[in-house]
Image (cartoon, rainbow, N blue to C red; front, side):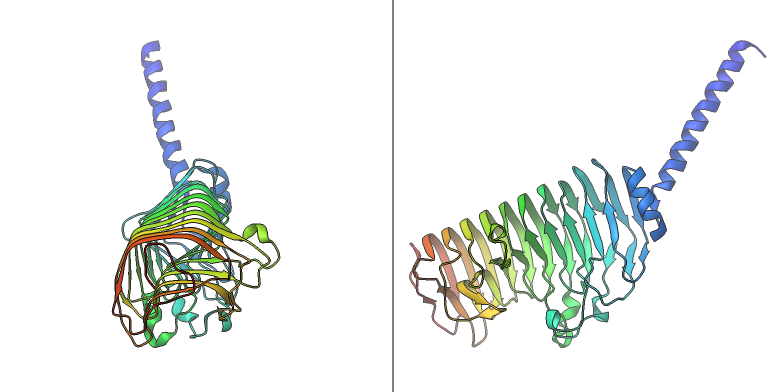
Length: 366
């Protein structure tokens, strides 16, 4: 055998070995059993989660290496267990996470729903994203037991084309507190082109700045919301600044727009809040509800100045309401709690009750 033949054989063996290693490495980065999770997320930057079942009381912890690409395939399910959760926790810098066509993460909420939400049996939160940047898109969450997606302490993060479907919780009014997206302490968050069908807030901002929610479709819940003052002990967490909701539809819901501040928080603020091009239909309670009197889970009628709302811009908010409780606009501010509300193009019909405002926005007659 000539030396050239030997060199050729060695080269072919090297290529075959490399191809074998690539296949082997790729296979080892596919998670099909919960026992594989820890080793895969520590060693791989291209990961597939495929047809996975997670045992009771366990969190699918996807604490990814920087730059990781992860894909959900098939069905991910979770054993029933009465606990706080979350069922999934995602974390990583500059990550890209997506769902393949036909995939679903099924929280099997019907095993938990009791019509009482927070006040009933213990139910796990579903999908938590924390300390993350990058993009998470094409995710299908089905039948959240409790709150669906919690976004915490993340920067420069985009969530796109999510489908959150808890519509089965409408049956016998069993689904409660199934918030679509809960946002806390984020900076630079974009959520866009998402569908939420649930029984509570479509989006609930608890704190954050530079937040943009665009092209949302919200059905069956409580609308596009801010709830500021959730923290009773740390006022530095009670803020919302430069928050925009745009080009969205809210249908068959309790409220379309809801801004509430908590009177039992020491202090906080809302600044530079915009609702633009919001369409509504089938609203049963309030088209726009701004209340500075929230405490203990409900309105008290006693507004406070502890969390002032400054610069609330509303432009082109239109649609229809239904039911005997429907009121187009309700504003209840503390004596100096609201300032510089600039509204235009607000047209909400079908309200059986007249609008009530103790603070009057510029450009809107109440």
